[in-house]
Picture 1: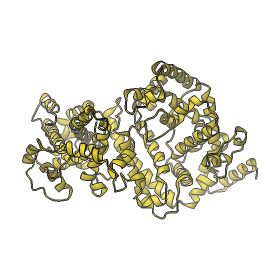
Picture 2 (picture 1 turned 60 degrees about the horizontal axis):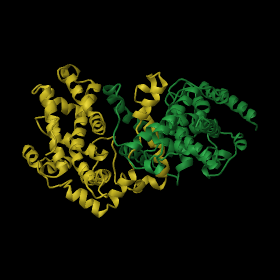
Picture 3 (picture 1 turned 45 degrees about the vertical axis):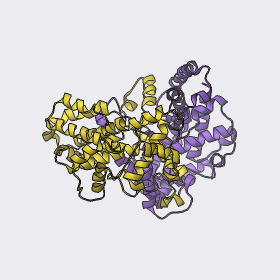
Picture 4 (picture 1 turned 90 degrees about the horizontal axis):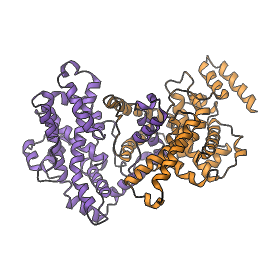
Length: 307
Length: 302
């Protein structure tokens, strides 16, 4: 079945399935590639998996200049600038605005670190390191914006379709992706998975040391951060259920029919196996995840021009 | 600055004290009981000097008309948590400063904080077997296990892959709770604020795992024994542990607080927190004025 045939097929399937305007809209969004939305982007586990894959592919394939790696290399155990690149999908700006920030911060960094080696700067917890994270972190955040091109252009239009206000699609897609990455063996226990995920939260707070209040609105922030613990618990409950016992019709609707993620896509295989890719083979990617991956790598290469 | 597990342990122990004695005002007890997790988060948050006193000042005279408002209860519980944080930070900093000043390069502030947090986990939470009172703060023996390997789910899912993904999601969740993210129009300012406010991963949890599972004997001697970090025979510690274990505390609290002056560092921090809490309660009830309360908050550990 060609791409066009498949779209037609999926489209007719959508229309014929019991008043599924929601699904029809999804397919429309999938195919129209709606550009940029001003809505606050949803926070999806898939985005972080994708951003890691983008960097993995770009680094393995030597697609970026050497001075680039520090801005996109990420280690969540450590306070390093590149970690900020994983939040670039939260940035809403034009390419010119992003480029201006890179220019400003690069010149700031050069002034600040003139004559200092990386080793000089590596002393953990030093004031120097804090400054480094702030200055280089801004560049990293901007690189994250470039890397998030595929999230903005390919995934968000699918996610923002009206009718999924409960976020069910995101839950199914996230857990499908997680299973591809992290499953060691099948499990029957929703409770165990839920408990494991929830137990990661105090470890996360240990890692950040202390919560930083919203100093513009501190008293109300106490309410929002209190609610956050309920929100995350609710999401984890849904994650655990979708991970262990996904409903087949929902998995079909949110993952398979949309061709959300195909482990046989060449770029996905390359990312999993740490293999080099070239841009021409990437263009043939089928699944949404693979397409967003390609767009992200292209975005990163584009962003590297500003360094 | 002290660490997460120790921050919340001090809050939970102070909450046990608060709920057990008549000196602490009823509104505080209501807020702790109804919004326990907010207090716990407060104890894990920066900003105590910005928010704790203004929140109490705002509601002390209007409590009766707002007392059933969930958001008011959250703010007050948060303020109580912030005071616990203040006691922990000012108290434990004694040990951290001593470590920093030690000419032996082995004894760093960092090592001290990590080792003492691992000990708090062992002594207050019995290595994860005694739970937090918050249903949203879930501990087990896997909490400080290497890659959580004793958790039953780790046979079926890879923690080393899953945890960074969930942790990053929560990191993004937290910055999304700040109003600038949606409201700041000046992009340069937005970027500056983002980098100031995002929750960087400043701590390496593997160091806590190592300190808990394979502590270095020399560091243990220095930070546990020489610093007299924690002594389960101290009366104030026996008092809170009895409550934690579901028993009636038989010891007299005031007497226990008095004796804590010369006891372990953890006991002295609890004593300081007890003063802060009592001062806050007296202030909220109108028994003391603001300058007197502020003076109490300047107390330091003995």
